[in-house]
Length: 219
Image (tube, rainbow, N blue to C red; front, side, top):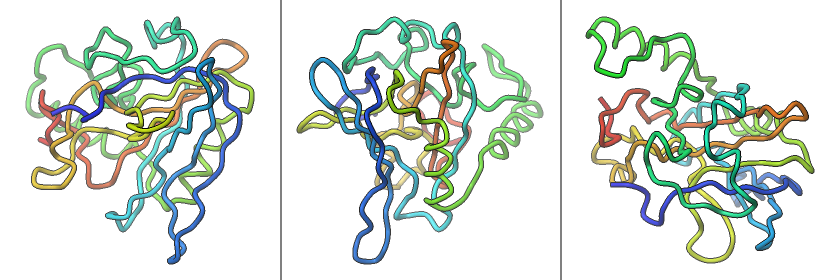
């Protein structure tokens, strides 16, 4: 099933970023972005750790051109619901040519088993793993106050905000999050550079698979 409350992209201007206040055990899990839009200020909770993982999250930062992003670059400020399809502007960290790990071969139809295994190995080994401080530092390195940002994820049910800004597929069957597995609904943070290109930060939990079926379940 897809995310319970929809999926989309928030477009606006980055006002600030701040890490979570640690809980009574010193734990914190997000970098919170404040994004200005005509409708008001949104809070975007970008995941940089997991309470269920001993190694935190895995992440990647990379450059993306406007041409690779498709229709989302033309969106006006505000939150826009997106269909979970390849043509809507949605993100899929496994299937989207601009977001999947580089180095493998992409096939419209299923590749041979041996090549699929190589692609899976490349995908699994292209992520950086570490703690919340390292992940937050990687995210903060691409942030620019005053820049146009695009944040993909699930809207808050109360107030203005976006969460589930991480991979939203590949959770193990039987886990509490498996019901929300789905393709073309992954989270991502994009920051526009002066040249019109974008710096991207994406993350996934270490328990999430880098290969999934058409329902978003791990394979």
